[in-house]
Amino acid sequence: MDIKGKGKAKDPSLTPAGSNINVGSDGLTAEEQLYQETVHRLQKSYSKKIKPLEQAYCFEGFHSAPLTAQDIGSKPMILLLGQYSTGKTTFVEYLLGESYPGAHVGIEPTTDRFVAIMNGPEPKVIPGHAAAVSGDLPFSGLTKFGTKFLSRFQVAQLNNPLLSNLTLIDTPGILSGSKQIQRGYDFTSVINWFAERSDLVLLLFDGYKLDISDEFKGAIQSLRGHEDKVRIVLNKCDQINQQQLMRVYGALMWSLGKVIPTPEVNRVYLGSFWPKYKTPVGTVYEDNIDLLISEQRDLLRDLRSIPKNAALRRVNEIVKRARQARVHAHIIGHLRSELPSMFGKNKKAKAMLDDLPAEFRKIQVKYNLPPGDFPNPEAFKKDLEAFKIADFNKFSQRLIANADEALASDFPRLMQKFPTSNNQAGNFGFPDSGSSSQDETTPSARFSEKQRTPAPGMHVPYPPPYSAMAASTSTSRNPFGEDTDGNPGILRFRTLFDGNCDPKSKVVSADSARNVLSQSGLPTELLREVWTIADWDSRGELDQVQFEVAMRICERLKAHEPLDASKASVFAELGLLNRFHG
Image (cartoon, rainbow, N blue to C red; front, side):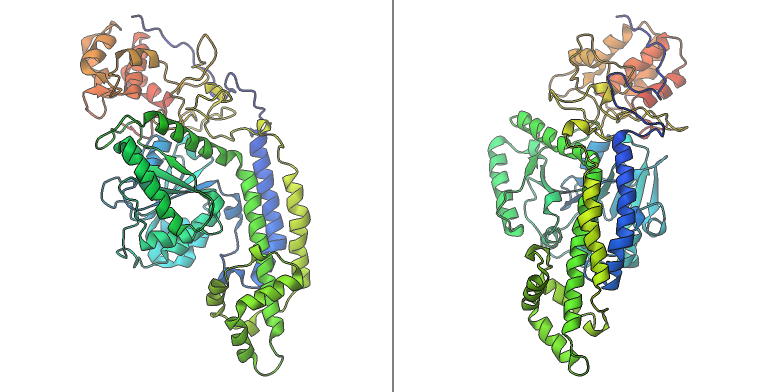
């Protein structure tokens, strides 16, 4: 076998072959420009027309603190919730293709804190207190939960392309019963805070943990009002056979029906979300493989739509908040106006609190407000008891008029700027690989609509090969193959690997690898070092990515490139620099 050199590398600042995405003079795609413009206009409308209304009637005391510019302009966020050892942290690794700083996985409860996984120039951990006061991070609102919570919160940063337009929130595993109720902070309120700011909430279960504990029930119920964001994931489905899976699915739906009182059936994704570089734990049943592949593809497609629809979701969230603030102002203004001018204020206030649903009906009729915009009377009463109604500001028609103008004019103008066809919207920097759908983009354009020149020390922005979003499966319809120069992260030795690997374990044995690598004609001493580099976990066998590393290093060595330089170049091409620094 002759291993040929790769030739001259393409300039990474060029647009990938096969991509027809227009990049402006500022280096941004049309979708990114739209997102930035939308965020800027939302910040302006909110600060001038919605925020004053919230502050005038203490909206913060009943809902959440006023939004900052960082809150509105933050990257799309995915929140992961579940009981301990259901695979939340492993799911993050499955998406990223690598572990994040401070991550720990085990069968026991391991993640004992909230972790925001974000993009950064190098792997590092920012403690919660520092993250909450940083002007560059959207977590200043977390200070209201106190020191005990901030000591259980941290930001993990790493240079991973999937995080360039996305933030992942890993949460502590929830124990059964009331074992973890006493956390020192209001767990459900923290969940609600993150849910308000998230674009998607994933509830993870596995076939052996279908019970919903008291605290988990409270966390799920705190998601009311955000039902459109919630997705259910039944993980580790490859560890139960087909008959058991059918029964487990039915039991899960029954359990969810008691906690989520809606007539609609919740969408449940089935899967086994193991990172490609890890071997699944326990017995693996193969009778559900086709079903699980299809389900996992559906979930990944759902995840890919998040950055693409980020600007639209931002508008939606601000509109929802504006409607809540408007109704809140009407409620407070009405209750304040009903108080007598001199005596009996406390008595009247108590009477209104005792019959709050009746007061809500009066307000609905008087101002022609939809009943669905009103808060839960019991929860509102509980919050209102902490205030004196007489201390609130009187009803201001000017503040209401400003909010009405934003809802009737500002936000609809923003909506007119969005594409009316899905074909006009790109993937906004989020990878779109791993699917065999006919309408997918070519591999060279899958990760981003344009190539960006990487900053010093940063690798080319393609998803790591172990990532679920990496272009590990060919969907090219070009009879001459894929443009591997356009995307150096594409695994070029897949066919050779498939011909030499064990069909069940999907690894190449040491003997098979020796036969293949020996055909390069390199000295045995050099091949021994290549094996040491590729077999970094000392398993005595190579998975698909490790085999790719070995073949590429041999390729470069044949072109008389030094071993250390070959290793560094191959790791950079495949996006493995975060995992291996040696």
